[in-house]
Image 1 (cartoon, helix red, strand yellow):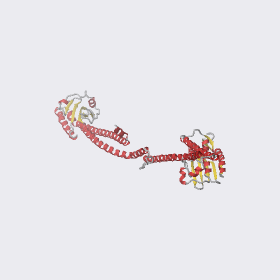
Image 2 (cartoon, helix red, strand yellow):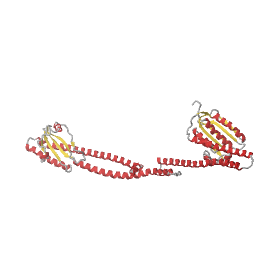
Image 3 (cartoon, helix red, strand yellow):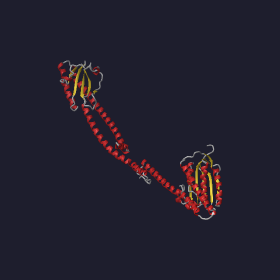
Image 4 (cartoon, rainbow, N blue to C red):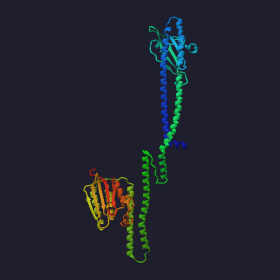
Amino acid sequence: MSINRKIFSSLRWRISFAYLILIGIGFLVTNISILKAFENRQLYEKQERFRAYALQVAQVIGKDYASPDADIKANVVFTIEEIGDDIMYREGGQPTRILVLDKNGIVDFDSYNDLSEYGFLRRNLRNEYPIIDELLQGKNIDPTPLFIGDLLSHQKWVMYSYAPIVSENQEIIGAVILSTSLSDIGEILQAMQSMLFRSSIIIIVVVILVSFGISAYITRPIKSLTDVIRKMGQGHLGQRVKVRGGGEFRELGNAFNIMSEKLENLDRARNEFVSNASHELKTPLSAIKVLAESLIHMGGEVPDIYIEFLNDINKEIDRLNAIITDLLSLVKMDDQSDLDQTEPVDLSMLVDKTVNGLKVLAKRKDITLETMIEPEVITRGDAAKLQQAISNLVDNAIKYTPKGGRVMVDVYKGDDEAVVKVSDTGIGIPVEDIPHIFDRFFRVDKARSRDTGGTGLGLSITHKIILMHDGSIHVDSKEGRGTTFFVHLPLGNFES
């Protein structure tokens, strides 16, 4: 049962069965159509021949049958026997019965008169068969096939042809009826049916084998993809599929490889994040532990050193708090793909306010902090989050710009977007590090970054906030010459 279920659930077998059903239905319809067309053609040709035979008999015996002389009239028997033999010869040995009726519908002559069981001599057919009455009235009667069963049955079926006997003065004096078996057509149809059945079976077998091979070729990429997915499910994330051919399978393979690469990168980022987070949290904890142990083992009265160590412990605790706060902010934003509420935000005023709040920090480092802000640049979003993102960018620019440097903040309208540009004359970012600057805990210069008091999460938070506002952020930097961040946000207005 499970094997059958597996076979019928296989795409390869489903394609083969689909081909089989379609071909089978096609052959069934085609064979029936061929047999029916052949049957109609054979019947039509035989009807036309026997219509001519009936007219021939009526014309040949007409003069003798109209004669009042009994001896001359008796010649009709010999004539119809000769004509019957001739018709049988033309029809390949198929016997034909010929009946001659007088004007009252009574059978005068019967080529089968020796068969008393089926004899019609002196029998009045006009009263039994309305079609005879119509014939004797001068109506044109087509040959009539009378079937018992169908063409392919083994039962007897017969066709009748009619013709009136007309005298010299154009008076109907009788009728001729020809009856012949149609078994010859039935035999031909049976032979055709057998031939079509055998050829159909052969073709269907060939189609099954070919379709099975074709379906195997078609489903091979899917099987390969399934095997790779199964390995990925076991934890081997570095899997790729070989992309062959074109069309949908190529697109599927490329999409899978892109997804696999992203999963691998995410897994690598997760491992790096855990490693970096552990390291970042361990550093202040180790410092606190060393300072605390020093206080414990310190002898004598040294209150000044106690105060210094406690201040150091307090700073490390603040650093831990900053890291944990930033981590919680990122976790919250990871769970929140969209903003809870949006409102028009005057980006010009928000950036001006943020920069003013950081001027004290710039002044301490003797850094010139300049702005060039276009008025009334409006976007939509969360003002607090946007202020946090801009503050992180400007704060980073100040931190990584040497004493006497310059930081410039511009706000202006671009093509259907608001742009915030933060540039500095700082240390710059190496080209190989630019793709990773938004990774969590990533630091270009780890020792210098820790000295500045950063957590390594500021740019990650900024990047997430900009994405939540349907914006984008990119960086242009040259090592030793400075860095420029560009933030692009959708334009908004206060009326919307």
